[in-house]
Amino acid sequence: MTEARAATLPPLVDTAGLQRILGDPGLRIFDTTVHLTPRPGGGYAIEGGRAQYDAGHIPGAGFIDVGADLSDPQHALRFMLPPPELFAQRMSAWGVGPGTRVVLYNSGPTWWATRVWFMLREYGFDAAQVLDGGLDKWKLEGRPLDTAPCRYPPAQFVAGPPRGLFVGKDAVLAAVQRRDRHLVNALSPEVFSGRVVGYGRPGRIAGSVNVVAKDLLDPLTQAFLPPDALRERLAAAGLLDGRGVIAYCGGGISATTDAFALHLLGHEDVAIYDASMNEWGPDPSLPMERDA
Image (cartoon, rainbow, N blue to C red; front, side, top):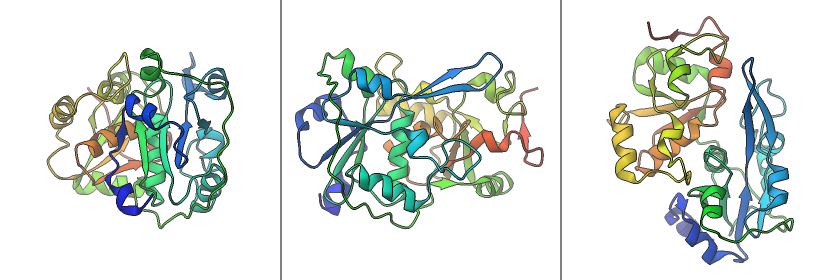
């Protein structure tokens, strides 16, 4: 696939569109499912979606374990962006390289697929799409499933210079102090307000607004809401005034759904706070606020 063609691919592909191109030799489909189950005392039980993949996946799809394979093994926090060398090694082994087209999906809310989509863009790969509605919509429509494992032939993925789509706490602190970029929290209203303590301290990064990631998706199909509905919700939060946006959540996962929705509306100046509240919440030196 040429660079020009990659640049024209829309960020989303619908289920019918993907089914039409199944079997294309340049196509690379990946199930990126991770299951997070809330624990009674706080936090989540984390389980990769391999068992569900083995039980039935989109024909020709491989599986990416985001936690085990696409996270920085040297970082104390889970799910952090891997360094370029490791990312390139993994993508090469999975058959992603020049001339390939990647389609990502998961079961449940689409933020694991959007997370990997942003990783690919961070390292210069633009020929990637997210399956709108993921496995949920695919199954609802009765489309085919397969249980055969898939392994694509190795390729040569070259990671380009990081584009700055993932940022650290210094960039977020600067945005708090300068008020030159929006901060949007993708977590539930209960956590955002401080009524529920999820990450060490109650509340949110000072100056944030709340756009719950799930509210940007159809609850039945997990597909993104139509553009007009996305525009209405994001504009109501003040995020479409032209300023840059940093999205965050608990660990930089559901935040990618907010960031992706902004991208769908043509907003390019969007970044993800990778460590998010897992880092910010427990650090008393970093400013937070909560509802009275």
